[in-house]
Length: 334
Image (cartoon, rainbow, N blue to C red):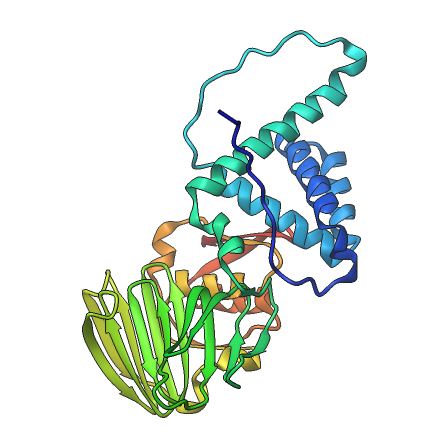
């Protein structure tokens, strides 16, 4: 039987000309990550990594991509210690590096099969990176606005137009089409319209739909059960696998405020706010205390300055933000 081969490719279109050599940059990023894992307290290694990251945005994207695979792979069960052969001193460094990269490739391969977050890149037709907003025009003239770190798959057929929201959130301006409904699915939730403007957000086990104009029909349990019919200025949050449904009002002009780089929240959890800010920050934001994530936040924040926004959020919750590096922020209770 042939040995299976695992590959990892990104469908995402690069916005940086230097990112054309993506495979090479990912190899370099993996090398830096392994060096840092092997010597976390080595100031020379950390300074070298910072210099490499500062060279270009494509370097930072490559490292973030590799780092996410590493974070996912950390949840894999241990396979136990491995006994390595004795290696001549002259070649030891080179072989250790090669074995480290091979080990990383194996972990990435396992993560590819075991974790949907890694498969996302292969499922998506369109996706955005950190802090990137993008507008798509579909074949029928419908506009799809993608928030940062969001992904969609397009499934257009003769009698149905369907968009699958795989991650993040998107705002849709739908062109009416007789006998050809427009459907957005996110997990077990489906939103059906003929012509309207609305926003759909997927986070954890919850899906939120907000209507700017027109009318939408929201169904759960894979379209088998009607949850609500929404009109202008109404919002619906579905969570707990469709068991928890909450309807509220929202100012129509505040629907998809992220398109103007504004984050408007009313009673959102700190965990949700951090997730939104993280999509606009080229690094990791970590909540040190899980109880912080359940605290409620109301306010308006500037997504163009996610670090300052995070600091403002933290102050309202008697918490502090510690910058380990420009790419790692820790939120802790004071």
